[in-house]
Structure formats: C-alpha cells, structure tokens
Image (cartoon, rainbow, N blue to C red; front, top):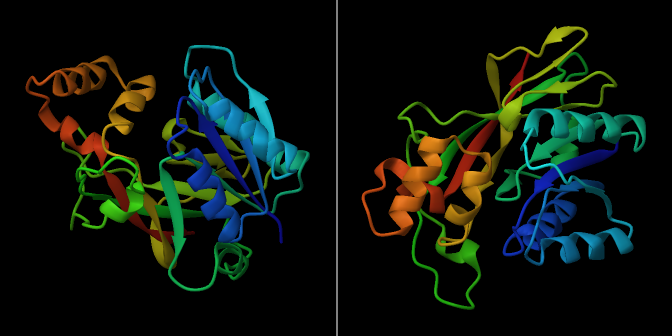
Length: 245
C-alpha cells in the first residue's frame, strides 16, 4: 500500500521540516507539496526534500488562496502520477498521530468499502515557547471540547482513498467523487491529529486562509488590542480519527 500526503505551504519554515519528518517516520511514503508565495525559508526546505527524492514540489504563484482547487489538484496527482492508495491532505501545522502502529498499517486495515476516514479535532492550549526550544515540547495541554473562532465546534478533517475524480472541499473537511459524497457520519478509529504551531508564528500565517474578520481579530490581538477568539490561533489541536461509511 502506498500512502501520499499533500501539503499546501506558505511561509511556514518554522514547522514544515518537522511535519514532513514526522509523517515520513509514521508511514507516509511520499509528499506532494504546493508552495504558495513563500517568502521565508520554506521554499528552500521543500526543495531539499525534493532533491532527496521524498517530495514532489509544485509552485503556485496565484494569490487567491483557492485551497479547494489546489488541494484537489494535488490529491488527483497523488493517485494518477504517484499511484497513491491513501491520501492525507494535510496542513503544515497538523500532525497525524497513530495511537498504535503507524498510519500505513491503520489505513491498510480499513474495510475496502470505506472510501474515507474523518478526524474530529481538539485544540491544544498555546504556551510561551522560549527561544531555541522545540515547539511541540510546550504544547501538551488539550481542551476537552474545542470551538472555532465563531464559537462552533471545530470542524474535522478527512483523508481518502486514491481516486481520479476526487474533489476536496475548502479546508479539507469533506471530499466527493463520482460515487457521491463520502459519508459524514463517523465511526471511531485508532489514530488522531495533533494541530501543532509555535506560539507567535501561527498567528502570522493564519490570515492567508482566513476571512477578513478573522484576519482583523488576529491583527488586533498581535497589536495588543482585544482579539476576540483569536487567542486560539497560536495553539495546537488534537483529534480522534473516525471511519466514515
């Protein structure tokens, strides 16, 4: 079984190498990464993994953040060009954690009739990180129930089998294919996602994918003004993965 992970990257040099190394160690065979206008060292990091034969690099010069379209392109490429059996469409600050074994063995055990698995997420609480320290060592406290910035339950994520006509919706929360919508009702499965981002860097990255209100709240918070729910933006989320039928 071949497992491919897609990554959409912009200015995330602080965490992208840790993300790639972690998932390659946990059973991912190959990475497809789309670099969208990075101005920090993220591009050089991705190119390094490309030279090692671990990653297929794609440059995306548009500033429209058409996430659903771009991730769909990568997911289809993973199947058509790289023969992926399972595809994880990941964010750079998310770490897929198997409770037992590795990701490949867990996905290989899923019934062939199940086209996708769903993940419910919970946030980790942001804590100050001393300079030079590894961010994950300070993100260890998890919320019992997590909400997004609008006060609704934090939406889950989906990984899926390789399909030539897969459609990944914005946010990687749902997928569709010719056979129809991959069912949304979950059944629990033995792994989870941890959403990990260093405090102080993640709030800088979030507005690229955020609506204007969220971007404004983050800006105000970083400027010392009231920031509403944006205090969550520097944290980490962990999630239980569930099988969708």
